[in-house]
Length: 629
Ligand code: ADP
Ligand code: MG
Image 1 (cartoon, rainbow, N blue to C red):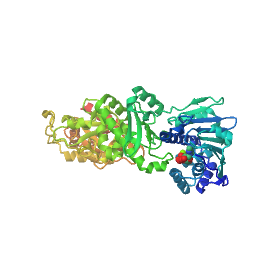
Image 2 (image 1 turned 60 degrees about the horizontal axis):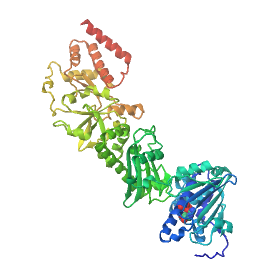
Image 3 (image 1 turned 90 degrees about the horizontal axis):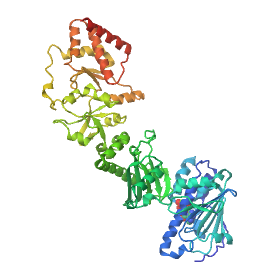
Image 4 (image 1 turned 90 degrees about the vertical axis):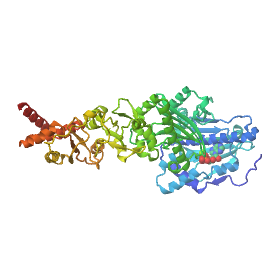
C-alpha cells in the first residue's frame, strides 16, 4: 500500500476549536499536568489494541516486531520525553484528521463547558482532553508515525500555536519507526521533571499499571525495564485466582494492610460490559466518618485508570473499595458526564444491589464474619435506611442490634419471630451506651411483658428513626417517646399485675401539683404505663423529635431542645408522699419531692440537673426530714 505524497503545502492550520483548546492548555496554571502521560499511554494502548484486532484477519501486519508494546524514554540531558508504540500507527490523512481537529465527543463537551466557565483549570484534569494535553508540558511536539503496512512514515510537528506541519519522515527516523507512532515532547522549562526516570515511573504506575500491553522504561544506557504489571486481575476468570491473589490485589489496589472480609468479583455482561472487583475490609478505615463521605472505588475504562471520584457506590457503602472497569464509557468522560451518563447510572445500580446481596449471603453463610463486618461498618450502612428508600427493607434486614434479649446481636427477623401475643410494633430505645439503656426505667413495663426492646446507640440511629420506617409492616416505636400502651400484651408473670392503686391518692390532683411546682421545666406531667418499680421517667412528646436526637441537635445548635414530659408511677411511695405532704400542709416538702423526682429522671437519662447546688441542697433537706421522722 503506497501513499502518494501530497503536493499541498506542508503547513496546516488547526481547526478553530483546537486552537481554542490549545490556548487554554498553554496558558493554564493547572498543577496536575501529569495526566498528559496517562492520555498518551492510553492512546498508545488503543493503537496496540487496534493493531491486535486488525492482525486477526491480516497476521502479516504484525511483521518482525511481533506483539505490540509501548516504550517511554525520558532524556534528562535533552529535556525530552519520548513515548513510542508499535501499534497501528497513522497514515498522512489520519495524522491530519486526528491531530488537527477535534472529533472526540468528550473533548467537544469540554469545549462546550469552557464556553460557560471562565476558569478552565479545574476542567482539564476532569476531561483529560487527550493528545492535546501534552502541550501543557511541551512547547514543541514531534510525532513520527507509520501506519501498519504502509511504506511511508510521516512526521507531524507543532509548537501548539496556530497549526502544524506535516512532511515525510527523514530516512533515519523512518527506519526507527517500522510500525506505530513515536511522540517526542520537548519539555517546557517548568516541566523538566518529566524527563526524570523516577517521576515517569511513578506516574506510569499510578495511572497505567493495568494497561494490558507492556510499558517499558528506557534508561540512559538504553536498557529496557517493564514498569507496569500489565495484568488487570479483575479481567481474569475467578477460577484462575486463588485467595492469595485476591489478598495481594486488595493490598495493591487499596493500600490497606488488613485482609478483606469479603471479595466481590464478577463481570457484568448485559447491555453493558464491565468488570468488578470489590473488597469489604475487616478494619474500619480512619476516615470512615469524614464529612465528605467519599468512597474508594476506582473507575477504569478499558484498563486505563480514570478517577476515584466517580461515586460508583452510595455513601452508605463507602467502606467498600476496589475497581470497576468499563468497556463502554469514553475515556475522556468528565465529572459532569459521570453524573448524567446513563451507563454510569446502570453501573451504580448494579453495584449497590450486588454489594447488598453479597452481604446478605455472607450473613447467611458465615454469620461470624458478617457480624464483624457489621460491627465495623453497621453505623455507616444504616445511613442507607434513610438515604436509599428503594433498598430500605433490604438494609433493615441486614441490620443487627443489641437488645433486651441476652444474645449479643439480633436481627429484625429474629425480633419478629419472638414478638409477644398482641404485640404490633417494634420497640426501641435510643441512648448513649448499652449499659445505661439496660437500666433505664422506661423498660420496666416492656420487661414485665417479655417484650423485646432494641437498643440504638449509634449517632445515625437518632436520625433514621425519625422517618417513621417500618419493617414488614411493623412500625418502629420509641419507648421514650409519645404514648405507649401494651395493655393487650399479657404479663409474663400474672402476679406482677399492678395491684389496684390506693384510692386515697387522686391522680389528677398530684399531677396538677407536680406540674405547678416544675413550671416550664416540663411540657407535661402524666400517669405512666411504662413504669413498674421506678417512680418517674422522662419522655419526649409525640410531636417532638426523639430525646436523643434532640440532644444531638441542641449540641450542634441546630434547634432548641423542647421540655420533656415527666411520667409518674402512681403506685410508687414517693409519689404518694407528695400527696401526703400536701395533705399535711407541707407544701415546701412536696415541692422538694417533685424536684427530686424530676432531677432523678434527668440523671437516669444521662443529664445533669440544671442547678447541681440546688439539687444537693434539696436532697439534703429531704434526707434530714427523713432522719427526723
Ligand atoms: P481520543 O484518544 O479520545 O480519541 P486523543 O486526542 O487522545 O483523543 O487522540 C485523538 C486520536 O489520535 C485518537 O483517536 C487516535 O485515532 C489518534 N492517535 C493518538 N495517538 C495515537 C497513537 N499513538 N497511535 C495511533 N493513533 C493515535
Ligand atoms: Mg486519547
